[in-house]
Length: 162
Image 1: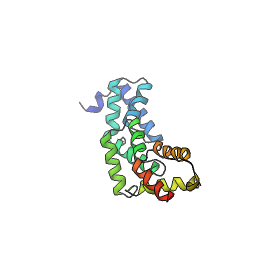
Image 2: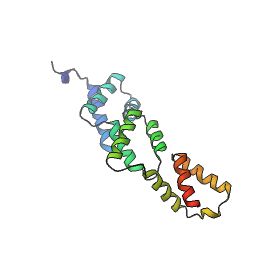
Image 3: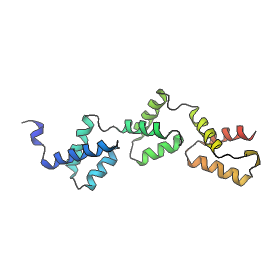
Image 4: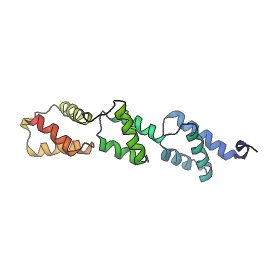
């Protein structure tokens, strides 16, 4: 008896729905599981469907994280990227692997954060020499909220303020 003959009709429907969801956009495993749960599939059908698409390489959280980093690294810092990916249910080891791949492929490097802070700072068209302490604190806070490291922000802003 082959494995295919033991798959129930509901499991087949769950597989088809899973494939349909993945044709629209890449998803995390957690997101896919939630969508299947919302569609009222059983835990067993969900497990089979997720394993099915994983076996074919259609579901890969590291690939998802890599693509997210590649697309978002021009506007978010490393900390914010990690936080957003964690919120999407990507495991920390997948996030770290995705950052390693992004670094190897030249999408990010140690200068990326500095360059991005400088780029965002230039977009603000501010005369940094003329801003008061309250505005400077707001400026620092805006970069921290975007996920940039304190040391990186301070280094770039110091270079602009001198």
